[in-house]
Length: 280
Image (cartoon, rainbow, N blue to C red; front, side, top):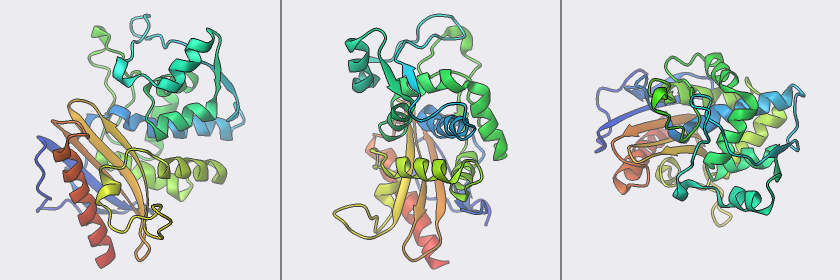
């Protein structure tokens, strides 16, 4: 099924979505190739790039990384994370010692589960932008690019943007679940991290019968969000108990994900996607 002529009504100023089967077939979409500022969605292909390095034996999950300021390659100056976005765990590590180190696994986990921007930047320093963009190229991404660290506000970098589309990210997540990008061990690890994601206000909230709550057996939803003052995104895999699994990416602009208008709009799209999948 191609682009829908009757999209779900949403209020943010711009929105797109893509729903694909795990085998990569597009099921339902709206403006799916439109690009948005990616925000923290970049942490998904970044995690794949890091785990590929682990799979090749170039590093290990217990490899120690020094907790250090990230230097902008564009201005050669330290990148300053907004105070309300600082990772408290990494802040404590820095305060304990100027040579403090942290295992790579902890950085991956902080980046995905609590969306740590500092962990993301440290991991970007470890693998480089090219490795992350190769991940996107390997799944045929048409418009998504990673070109700068988070919070790098260097004026001269205005044209170097991190951008994403719903089609690219739904396709990427489906390829992860198929086991095409990582070893079985790394695939299972990343899947578990997405299931442990703490921000569940959008696609998980709109998916009926979600499990992992109070011991209930129900649909499993693993997701990664992205949000700034002007964009709100979510990408997730959904495994219903009575239908085939699928991946859904919803990207919006105009307001943050935390705005109830945005989170409930994305949740309504997630509900429609779930109902469509169950009805066949």
